[in-house]
Length: 382
Image (tube, rainbow, N blue to C red; front, side, top):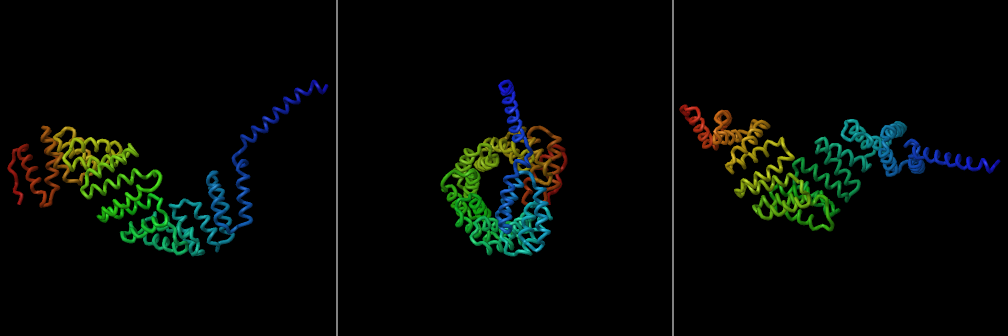
């Protein structure tokens, strides 16, 4: 009897085992995640004031997609200890950082616990992203008093100073950040930009070269080479600028902004065909850039490829009809292509809009073309 039942019993056991395995594999995420959550909860029971454990626990909850549950938990912690700045901060960091609600709770956290570094730091960032640079500077500086030697804080303080227009202060903070951490490329990029936009091109070049001398490859080196090329271009060192741009493209072949830089170099040396080719590549990623359409149209105009340039000049004035000079070149290009109506319309707009004395020669040329097209006497320019 047992012998006859034994195969069926084995088969049933296999089915049961498979069923249990399937249930384990397919059970809800909540059940699977419980051990990890319980681990952090036990740690928090032993160390309820340890912020690092709270943050790790919150991050696990967020990774599991349980933001709502985490908010409920920390709202309860906060309301049970309303004077505890730590719990106020922990609730605030679960909110959308760009909302006014998050800002309110961060301010409350700092008020209750002025020496809580994380709250100071996040409050400074919240103000920075709202364009309130004075408040950001105040709290970044307070954060550094609590924890001196924090390279990222010096860097972000530098950004706040930069946007406020305090460039020497920004430069000092960027340099301090580099002294503390010489391997963060973003520090070099922003220091170089600060030097570049204050006309200190040699200083910018030195910063970029130092960044390129760091050990190992960096994902932002293409940006370093591009900015290095811009600094060389400002110094009039076109060959070195082009070399840097070409290196940037080796690292990032689809770096469309660099094609515009190459187009500018070609245009300045009179290679209008080369400039047009480079601008066309740039335009592939910036089809609504009116300035770029104008540059491309002007390159074709100077290369006497008027027909190719007209659509870009037309698009430039469609995007920004306040760019008076574009109407001049559009009208002249239409005139040279025998497009009388287009020439009249563009040149009349140009003459009507142009008021500056420095443009009288162009205004005269425009009126001469209109005179030829309309066969009317030119009015006096004076």
